[in-house]
Image (tube, rainbow, N blue to C red; front, top):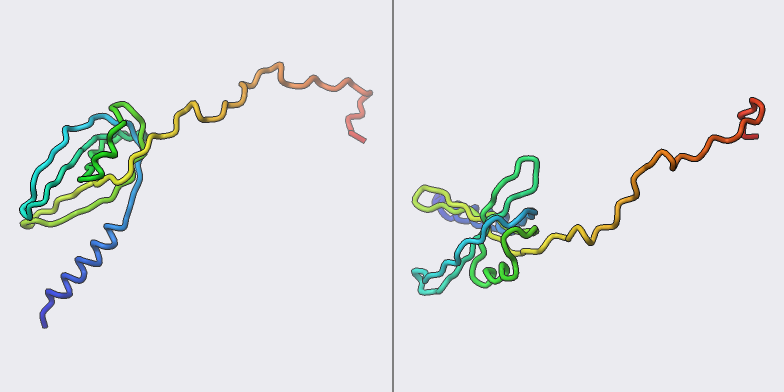
Length: 143
């Protein structure tokens, strides 16, 4: 019995599961790297654009995202220092016994500006407390 077709089937199933998995993260663009381009072995032209964001968490992380081909235009209109929401997929592949990982961004949006948020309520002050009611002879029942 040849197990090779079964292994190929499992690889395709796992690829489908992970290819359909999408994630999202918010952060500030730290660096926009230079665009790269080339020609594949099959003769197809490709281009990619990478950028790095830093998350705003208790322990901030820097993450480098890749935009391929037509997705590389998503970065136009953005500059370093801007807050963004990035939707992305994770992809891993094996080559010569080593595993390589890509973090492929497919959607890039500016985060909602703080000016669009409603105003916070005014601060509490001691003079906001209503005065005590007048003493009515020791009867503090309301009826």
